[in-house]
Amino acid sequence: MKKILLLNGPNLNLLGQRQPEIYGSETLDDVVATCTDLGATLGFEVEAHQSNHEGVIVDWIQDARGVVAGIVINPGALSHTSVAILDALNAFEGPVMEVHISNIHKRERFRHHSYVSGRAEGVIAGLGTEGYGFALRRLATLLA
Image (tube, rainbow, N blue to C red; front, side):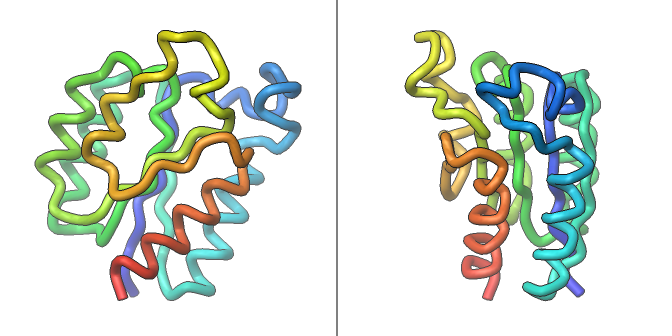
């Protein structure tokens, strides 16, 4: 069974608690459970991680090389600042999907640019936590 890496960046551990008017009431555990179930339906094992630390995320991406088929990543605020995550993703050989729960283009100007978008095969923003499912489905299509 192919493996998909699901990565979540800073503050996403607070889903369901932090700004529910923007991010909704689902927790990260809810998102992971939904993605794990959907992944199994699509024929993938989903391995999920969350960190508030950029270097840890870079390590997970590097460790994924040659091991996982694709990556779904919500880098959170690191989207707008991390060339290190972009560089790690550029060294990864499989497809990458970027997810944002909120519509980053309707928010503060500094959130409009994402370094990760330059590497991602697709970017899903503003569809709430449902965006993760769309990203997994797209990866399934790309990997078929």
